[in-house]
Each structure stands twice: as C-alpha cells, then as structure tokens.
Image 1 (tube, rainbow, N blue to C red):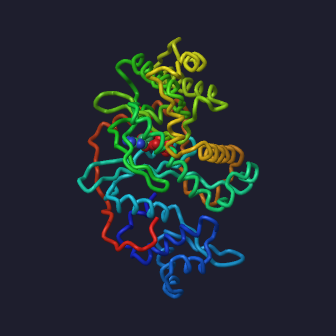
Image 2: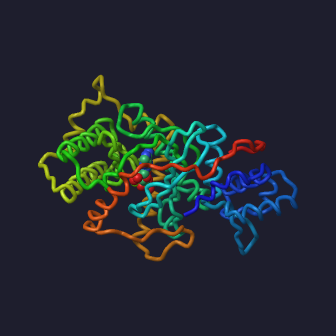
Length: 393
Ligand code: ADP
Ligand code: MG
C-alpha cells in the first residue's frame, strides 16, 4: 500500500489549514460539513471549495455524500500526513523509507516504516490503525465513546499510540529490553530501529534453552514491576542480528497485574512461548513462571521494587484511557470473529493466514531473505519549509 502521507511537499499552507479544519471538525462530526470547514479554517468560501477538491484528489480527505449535507472526512492518509508533518516540524524525522514487517498478525494492519532524521539515522515509525468498528458493535458496549462515536477510529488509533508510547518510555527507563522511544504524534510512535529478525522468522537458535529462560525471565520481570505484556509471542519478540538478544515490542495491549483477568493474560503469554518453542525448536521445559508465585512473592514495599503500572498511570495514560481502549479493542476482536463481511472502510488485508507447518517452512525462506544487507532508500524527503499556519495540530 502506498503511504499517501509521503506526498508532503505538495501541501500548501492553505491546504494544511483546511486539512487541520477537517481534523478538528471530525471530533464531533462523522462527516464534517463544508460550512464548518470554512468556519474553522477562516478562509474564504470559494477558496475552501477549491482546496477541499485538491485534498480529496490526493486522498487526504474524502467527500461523503450524506443525506443531509455534503461534507468531508479525514482519511487514514490525511491523518498519517498530519502526524508525519508534526514529527518533521519538530525535526524528529525528515524522510520516509521502506515499509517493514509486512507479515500480518491477528487481524492487525501492519504499518511500520523505516524513516530517518536529517543526519540519516534510521528509526522505525509505527502508525497505529485500529479498524473501524460498526455502530452495531459499539452500541452493544457501554457508551464509552461519548460524543466521539463518529471519529472513533482516529481517537482510538491515537489512544493506542499514546499507550504504546507511555509504556515504552517507562519500560525503557527501567532497563527493560524494548526499543528506545523517540517521539509520538497522533496515532504515530517513532522509535529506535532494531536490527533484528522477528522470532517468528528464526528457524534455529544455538541454545534454545537459554533463549527460553531469558524470555520467561522478561515475563517475570514485567510482572514483578506490575505489568503483563498481553501479546507476548513470536511476532512481538525481535532477535537482534548481532547479539541474538531479544527485544520486546508492541505494547498497546499491556495490562496491569491488578487487572481482573491478569492471571489469564499472564498464562497466555507464558503459553505462547512454551508452544512456540515446542513447535519450532522442539524444546520443552517443565520450568515456567506461575502468576501467583511471581505476584505473591514480590515484596512490593521492598527497596528495589517499583510499580510501573502505577507510574504509567501517573504519566498521563490513565485508567480511563486504558479502559476505553481495552473495550474498543475487544469490540474490534468480537466483530472480526463474529462477522465474515469485511468492513466497507477497511483497507485491503492480506489473506494468507498460515498454518503452523507453513509457518515453519516460511521461517526457513525468511531467514535467507533477511540475512541480506539491509537497504534504506529515502523515497521522499519531507519538507519543513512550509509556512506555519495559525492553526496547528
Ligand atoms: P503490529 O501492531 O502490527 O503487530 P508491531 O509493533 O508488532 O506492530 O510491529 C510489526 C513488525 O514491525 C514487527 O514484527 C517487526 O518486524 C517490525 N518492527 C516493529 N518495531 C520495530 C523496531 N523498533 N525495529 C525493527 N523492526 C520493528
Ligand atoms: Mg505485533
């Protein structure tokens, strides 16, 4: 899929004003009426007419034929654009390269790009995308969206990125093996690029027992700090190319050990590792962490202990946000399981769900591909020379 947001050079400051007006209008309008865009942007009516046309042509907004009025909606591409522009304005990144990590995992749309700053340092940009959930699915839940119902995909994708950012920061600060977080805007997280293979693509390791216990140890350290990863599997564990050390990624579903289903999440994380090691490396061990033991034994009041779940909450990603995101992600899952009809707004998904055996064969293929030199070609240089408009995101 083409990343429309790489088209950054061709957005004028008036177009940017209009785009921002559409984003602001989306906060309480599913389809933002033209009159509101005019009002927010503070531009002339005739001018706005032309500008929305050119933005729609580039797929940054789309025109909706609503029964009551004509209006526009921000597209994924438009939202990507706004986030990347904000990141480039503050010099966090300046060019966009190739997409990585295109293997699909559990219904998520992977949107991971290699980007670089002005000095050519490579980083990873993750664009969070939570699919649109039908009104039916949302209605069945508590009214957690409030007035935001309409713009939920934007709001939820942003929450997801904010959550990942909050957790990555605190984990990194406390010496956990996670990428260094660099910046965050809207639904995007900018982080250190890890030169690694996802564990899923590793067909052989020198010492599976050692890796197994390292990975279980990370689960234990998480729990001792009050956290459970919640999606701890071969997709979200990267094995560093040079050292073979594991780095853990992907945090939008992390939960606190005080969560009502904490034990279930904990056991699922443990089970994922056990199953994967058995299938892939034919490695089995009778040793694995037990939730009760880890949690009960932890001297919370001890000198070295810290509660990262509490710290994250204090850092601004609070209990309410956690809950809202959790319920939404649950709706997405339910909807995916419950209906085979694709959401009309969803982007294309790749359909090769694989069986375990195929996965193993692919691992061997993937190894060959991945051991080649890493290439980075900046396709587009983001401009930061546009005039800033008085509206900023
Ligand atoms: P998703 O929500 O799509 O599962 P992840 O954070 O798990 O997103 O990233 C998807 C893939 O992108 C990973 O499996 C990995 O291949 C690649 N990836 C993500 N973050 C990094 C990183 N910091 N360095 C290198 N590769 C990464
Ligand atoms: Mg993942």
